[in-house]
Length: 507
Image 1 (spheres, rainbow, N blue to C red):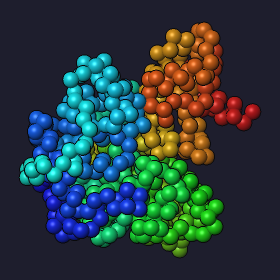
Image 2 (cartoon, rainbow, N blue to C red):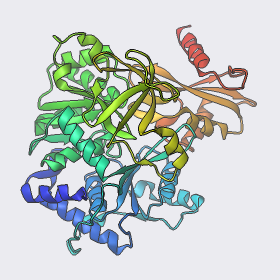
Image 3 (tube, one colour):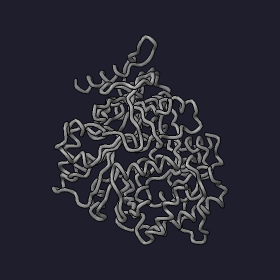
Image 4 (cartoon, rainbow, N blue to C red):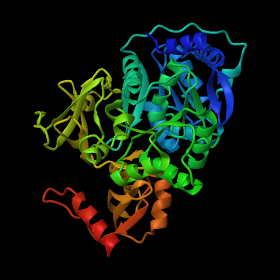
């Protein structure tokens, strides 16, 4: 079954209901969204984009984003949503690696992406506008048949190898992710609103599926991103409004609500995830914002679907070990099994610390054209998440660490290897190692320990990083050292670096 049938049915059942809003204004209804998708499918076919092929979307959040995705799915084409915060060089690499036939991007980055595509040897890959969405001269295409195994969403997630990996999600995985949201996070009724301040290329894009299925309205903020005051105003306008938010976004919502002196109006659920939420932060959020929070823990490889802490539990302080559960990431979602295993894949007893593993129909098919990485990630049917945690006797999961040294800043994943490789391309840098530092606003900030063999300033290294990687990945702090701590095998001891950084901050 092609997931585009959901939109087709919504257009029949709720033709005049708002489907997409831009701020407080209705941008299109469900009849209009389905027509845009069908015309977009016709346009893609006219450009030679065939079923089973791929198109990339490299855009900030705009009302056109969702029609582009649905047009691709309607045509039987997979989407490659690229984080709009990435550098054009990174976006070009993803588009080339995934074998895209088209990249949809706006004028601001088109020339830069085209230049980078030439460097990858894919200069002929077409960059497209999306004016065709409103062209009523285009015929309405029929929905292309698809199977459960057909790729539909290729999400590129950074990796410790320094190059991102394309998570291959099929029709089946997107359907199960949607069903999991409806069964574990909240139900959706016609007219319910979901706000999209978080990138549609990530979890917010996944969260829109239940709202299309049940005739809700997808609200794209006028700012195109996250502004806490704007989000609270939009919730009050649309009512029964939900959103996906990283912990740093939750903290900003709390700060704005405190300045307003009253609880926000119109909120249904704030679904938080994408980074660690500290116990004190969620307790303050409940006190200031109200009983509107649910938590999910997942990865691109198992989208939104590893564990959940439902709103009913978060709002029930009478339950046993309430604060302990509030500090957890909940229990296994309805579509998966969760297990804690050792390095050999052996399941560990309750309460012991080990790697979090998950299996179920929502787990990815594998990494795009990377069979070795797939084999390392999925062992005997279990996805090895690389995260470390423990399960208690009631099945609640506590996250303890990230074995891959990933840094989560503002809800975005940053892998040290990418930053280190960018730094090492500067002629003055001899060695570099990157770790995360706790940050009250962002969750974590990037700290670079650098050994240089000639004079260079932090400002010069910052400018160099901005020419190589996305702005949000660059180090916020530079520590110039004479050498990096290493073990007998020459491996940098990042635990020692974190200790050095903590001691430097407290000195």
